Image 1 (cartoon, rainbow, N blue to C red):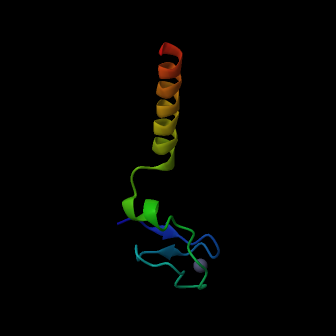
Image 2 (cartoon, rainbow, N blue to C red):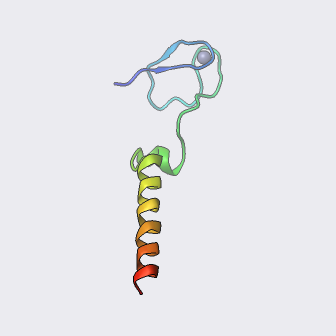
Length: 64
Ligand SMILES: [Zn+2]
């Protein structure tokens, strides 16, 4: 079970689903929404995938 350290008070948060710090009440800046729910693909993977598509489309433009 991953332990999340609060960025404000440095206390460990053991509840993986907690959105607010149990100690200081500050919002835990963890990824939420589409990418947070998926946890994969990561942003780096998406950027590499987009770069590959752009490269392929550019090559197709040159060839045809
Ligand atoms: Zn805190």
